[in-house]
Amino acid sequence: MLSDRLPSSRRGPLGLRLGPEPIRHLYLHTPFCATVCPYCAFHVHTGSAREMRVFVTALLREWEKLRKSLPVEVETLYLGGGTPSLLPLDAFRQLADAFRPWESVEATLEANPRTVTREKAAAWRDLGIGRVSLGVQSLDPAVLRTLGRRHGPQDVERTVAILREAGFGNINVDLLFGVPGQSPASWEETLTRVIAIGPEHVSAYELTYEEDTPFFEARAAGVWREDEELSIAMYRTAWNLLESSGYRQYEVSNYARPGWASLHNQGYWMGNDYLGLGPGACSTVGLRRWQNRRNTTDYIAALSAGQDPPREEEALSKEVRQRERLLLGLRTSRGVPYSWIEGEAEHARALIGQGLAELSDGTFRLTPEGRLLADGIAGLFVG
Ligand code: SF4
Image (cartoon, rainbow, N blue to C red; front, side, top):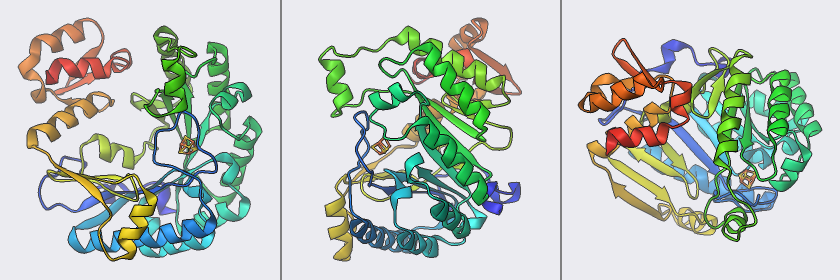
């Protein structure tokens, strides 16, 4: 199906657009999860099938409003959350009707292993979803328990088999390292087993302790503490194992087999405009950025009354957007034009001398070791 990979002729330039160019990237935030994990800082909560249907109706109203006022030509569509794979199939069909044709865009659905059934997988595929991103996190039952996840390693293998059977040829697996109690051996075994399962794409994120989460409180109380050295070692293990198995790191936390890098992710990292729909979702269009309030009840109430959802909006300057583009670009294997940083040539030369960066064909990019320090290095260039 076309949505597995976008033909290059439809990809369009992934450059910064500040003019009246169409918006090509859509994110739909579904705030429902079966339970709320103790490290999660997204806007999520539990909800019944009826609440999910009401929510989808509101989301479609927001879409109607936005598409009437802004030029949109969807190239990538990302259904995230939350756990959008929990949505009842009739609500899914409503979404599919509104955003068709999904077959001609990169359409990604986030799913949790225990929420995928044969019936759902076949229906998603029929509706044109081409890519599924699975929230696996670990294949170690002890680590999964610490994370408050309800699935086990066997659920992951079963889910991937169901998705393959349904015809999905583009699967991402999300993993976490730096979890309290997670040993290097556990991380290595998870990576080895995931590689054997064979997804096209792997995201390996370091756990962060977000404010207002039980994990944050546990760290503040001294129950857990971060181990930077261990996290660095785990980053290197991921790089070594994934790269030697045919995956390519195209951003600090993202690896793909050649040709399977996510276009949606790349759109963000190139600084393209995007629209985020749903409570808590953020949008950036030209020099405007707004975020819907993180409250599902208010979101539904406003849209049911024909109003815009409550939002915070900020005006950006061209300099701010350019700085963001530099920060994001340094995290990717694509790098940034050298002209963006030549004012800091001394820093650039020092980084190249230390093996943390390289310069070729006018492009400055960090090496894998440099990407480990990407945020700190970016600070050298943006002051
Ligand atoms: S399943 Fe994902 S989105 Fe839902 S609470 Fe857990 S971490 Fe957050």
